[in-house]
Image (tube, rainbow, N blue to C red):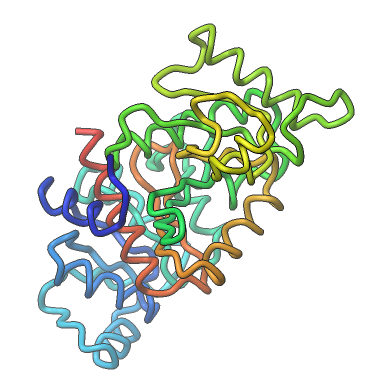
Length: 302
């Protein structure tokens, strides 16, 4: 069982170096992450963007551009399109958002002709190495799907399970989160949780153990679950927290980031190749861990 990002990094190194195409690469934290990923043997990169600005940033952070291919493109939309096409054509294994707005970047990812569209739901999968829990926790979806319905939640769950298995969690335990741990007809998230759990029982959701509804305390704390008398293989031991909506996911993501001293990284799952979509406020370390996750995901697609 993988329990830390250090173990994830070691697994990435054992799988061999993958290549990331960076869209609009003249972004200092992104290039710092690329620098560190290259140094650690996690990933190589093709940098797409305005060469002059990329050179300026590289000088500021001590990045040797001689180690990388640079494609000069000053138009952000075109740079995003080129970066995505590098992946769809097989020249790169994954694509990463640089200094470009999310809407422009995702338009390139979802381009019908040369994008990475699969017809599946795209969802954000955030992986946290939480010292207080001494294990990996996956939170989904904190960035893409605003108020997912039942079948969208099923696909978000399956995307997260794919990432969990990729990092070495063989049979992920999925807690479907709500405000309470009992089914309440007036609270739709509890109804969705109960249905998802039953779909898992009937084999409609595979390769994981799903239960819910869970309040967050009895999903991650065995003591809290025992105190409330909850008997479940998931109770207190959840690997994946499937949140009911984007507000819950966003609050949980940022709370863990800023208060728990947790390491984290995240990727978009559901595309034809891993997509690294980080927040502007994420540290370069978090971006580097996101590259590591994408490298594992790319390895599992081979």
